[in-house]
Length: 262
Image (cartoon, one colour):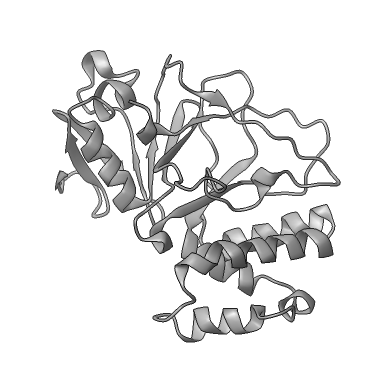
């Protein structure tokens, strides 16, 4: 990736040169980059994601950037690609959907997809539900720190929190994190009512410094879903930023597993 500072932007803004085009990028969060249409877009303006970034000769380099940054947000994309699928799963007042818990896509598969792309197409209804995204390690620490005291005493959870926070250079083995996370999720689901559980996960979002920016029409978020270093993998979830309201009209999302589509 070739970047260069520009004299007209603040010190955190850059120009990303990729596929013969210049993209203005910013870093508004602790991780990840946000990019928009090429500065001189021409014919590729509407669907620069596919016509430039996922073009055969650029694709590998772009996916490497997703791996390195953890999250790449592409704004103002209009796409007619047919491979997107609707994000399914319903929530209710009395029960959280599986999507409301932090997860990797393909968590039950032997090999998880490398990159998951979640997208909000242009539509009539805005989306008020956030998608929280954070590094796996940050999520693990936050889930332990946010636990109510009466739940933290279960089993080895306090010792696990101490190992993460008191010995950050020597955390529990990465291969045990999914098991630990599953145990925490089952406990909060069992011990807390639905809205208390949602409030717990909002605390996790904050403690993990999750990316929870509002969705914009035409925005795609490409998330590193299977980094070779598991601690650098990102997790995501459907996040209600306020107590859930009934009969709430919300825009819909679509998704796909970009790296696996050739």
